[in-house]
Length: 449
Ligand SMILES: *Cc1c(COP(=O)(O)O)cnc(C)c1O
Image 1 (spheres, rainbow, N blue to C red):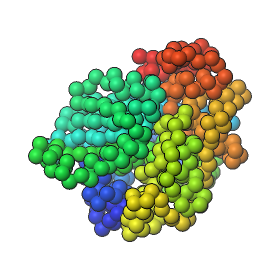
Image 2 (cartoon, rainbow, N blue to C red; image 1 turned 45 degrees about the vertical axis):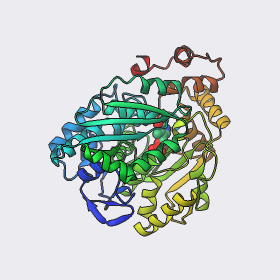
Image 3 (tube, helix red, strand yellow; image 1 turned 120 degrees about the horizontal axis):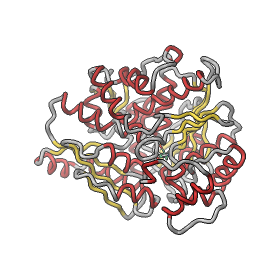
Image 4 (cartoon, helix red, strand yellow; image 1 turned 90 degrees about the vertical axis):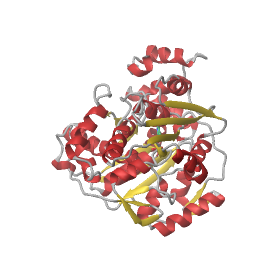
């Protein structure tokens, strides 16, 4: 399997090279040259790690198969109990927050550092790598944990000072690894992401770093090594539902994904292209509803104020991974044209066939009401990101839908308590205990610590 740049499909490199590079020199993102097929019905009984091994082997064909299995097993050993847990209520919840930092980013970020270290070693690259990461809150901590004291790989995280929750801030600021630096910036997530992209494309900085034998790479979902591991849980949840007899073999189901940078839902698109029986992929947004507008009108317009919401990991106006979808639906020439428009005037138009997608957005009030209603009626507690997705599922009256539950409610205790109509303390840490008292839901050990 080779990987191409979304801005130059003649450029073909191996999986290991794509992971090491992170982003293509032409500014494009790496994508697989084709989608291998995978029949989940023949793989129903695999453990999560064996399933991950089978699926990732189809893409990372230049990794030794046994080495890849070892890397996967080592990476997922950090998860509490089940790796991906499916809870069946009226809808199905794919809980992706039982990893080290209580958000779905752990799925890729526990693995990426090990993939990167292996790729560097096997390619004979001795230089130091500096990982630059912009975060809206969850990627930062997951990356800091994943790259904890990694050999020859340092990590620098930028987060918006006012854009993350107190818990997210504390998680990042208290990281005690020797190879990391965490910087909070005046600005929002888009400013942080733009700064990172600028550094990547700055020839002067690159030359300076080259003198010191330092190469830049990325832990954001622009790295294909972030995207591929996320394909696995779409297949895993499907197999789990078949085994629980909630759906029949081969039946098409939908997935509703709280979306920011479009990485998570794009992995769902990859799963569908590989043969997973998918009815619809539902793009759920908060008040920063750029994607809803794009998928309904064909115009992507980032000329608007970023709104701060209770689902901060989705407070994003420039969704990086959309570039990959547009490439799969058109060509490198068209991507270049659209990305130039976006860069020059923060707006572009693209009329594509997006039949497999649905979209919608939830306001703050709607999200809070959904959290309260679902807890009251179904006894299920969710975080605000998941609340956005559940709200869309209810509004669109979707049936047999897997809602990707992307973070533990305890990561956003104050907002969740507020949604439930409870009194909240000014101390966000105290709210963790209050939320536990009110709901009885177990506090993840990472957050407790
Ligand atoms: C990152 C994140 C999202 C959005 O995922 P994308 O891949 O950026 O679309 C949603 N929910 C939570 C909790 C997140 O951390």
